[in-house]
Image 1 (cartoon, rainbow, N blue to C red):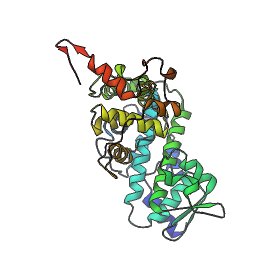
Image 2 (image 1 turned 90 degrees about the horizontal axis):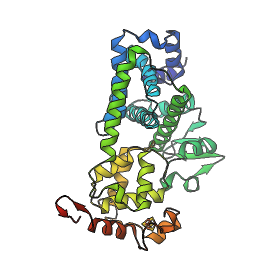
Image 3 (image 1 turned 45 degrees about the vertical axis):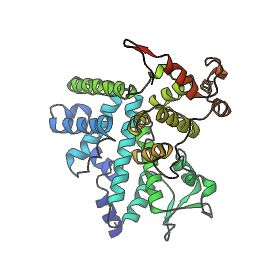
Image 4 (image 1 turned 120 degrees about the vertical axis):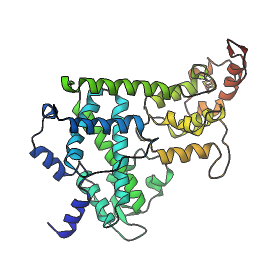
Length: 351
Ligand code: SF4
């Protein structure tokens, strides 16, 4: 093995997706039942699942530790996610793991460029070439499209990129973002491929506890302190919120509209981010920036208005052509009307 390659492999020893690590796990011939009575491994897997589903992104990412327990508990953690049979859990776990690997790539001090290229080609099968700053990498356009498909930022659109002989120029930071996106898809795909895994008796209590914690966290998040019960929101905003909470894709404009709406109703940036957390491609840094931007706390300092019904209709986001809304002109008008007649036990209460 070339010395370079040896260094890169040593640096990436924590990547359970590298062939060498997979081979190492396979050599041990581990089956699920082999973890029975092996409390250290089970505890490490439960911890990993809890970190991903319940703590991240409010709590910083766990650091990597190279150890047998860390490496061998990974497939067990994946199996436990499959046992939960939750679309949300799969998406969140994939996003969390991808974020961890991206953080690890960012923290590599030496040979970082080689490590990025190695993960891109070896783990993700991407055709990538190293270049010179600012174009430190060149990625084949077909692979680039696969990696950038869910990235909403205009700079990632192919029309805004420099192309040369079928290869797209990317900076080092962009390469890490693209690799992260690719890893997230790969992990999610692996979880989907695992299908349903029956829970063995020795894991039943752990899985049940995880399921209950997950359920109560999701209930807490979905009933984030809002000024008016989401059931009273205009139908278009209710529909967008439901899609976000279910982790379903929402268009760029839909995201903007519902974020602007939630902020205008008095929800805080954190409360709005909680709704976005369900998205598979949730990136706390980008989400915070975008929400703060819409709230007028960043960039041009413009506090964005909620789009009018006419604009919502143009983007196909109005529900039943407004038949449920009684001829109003904007979702905020609908909200204010509902708020004005909101009555609780203490009498009439205005928001
Ligand atoms: S009429 Fe306006 S408030 Fe009602 S669903 Fe359509 S866009 Fe939303």
